[in-house]
Length: 253
Image 1: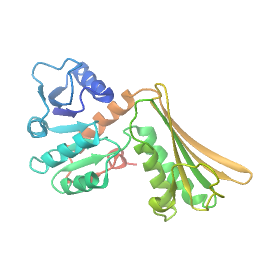
Image 2: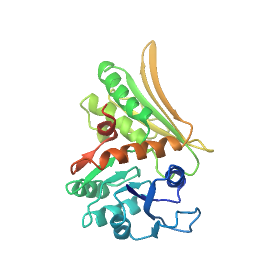
Image 3: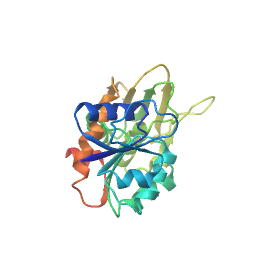
Image 4: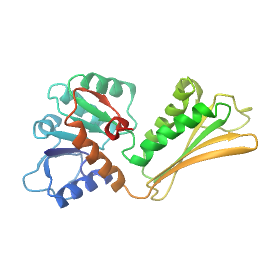
């Protein structure tokens, strides 16, 4: 199978390339912006054109930026190819574009490619439903270079909590408090971001009530977790029918 990689010189993209090279897998094409900072196999096509990437790949893994993902999806509408998309910070237009593209090809979209976070999402939904009177607060921590906040993973966790209670996240999410903001509302879901150092990723979902609280936490200690997770689901998505899939679908949870 020929893998295509968008954002091949990024932090996770570099790991993907190295893993594939070490395991003697074929990298059909790579796409990235800026200087080439790593070595690719001699047969790998290096391009900044999404159409060329798609034509030389059996499956494409995308850890990049929203604008690069948009270009990939626009090209994929004319060149259907199984896609694994892990880019966070997508706007509504880009998400709608993904939905349209998924009518022509299988696409797996996940804001986090780790098995642990997939399980955490299932857990927080269950707890949110069962502990209906508990207040929910989510705190996420990442390295100083992360550009979007809150993280895509934190937003997905918040969405899982809200959905389990029959709420629309946009109506109840709070991402900042300052000054005399008044008492916390009943359905409020707080989502807060911490940035600093080289933290790979840490997400804590807390459920707080009078006299007790429960906190569920996931910590990523290496980005290789995300790279290997993406490769695992890439092997799965190539055998699926057109549609938009989640990591839960690939892992069967």
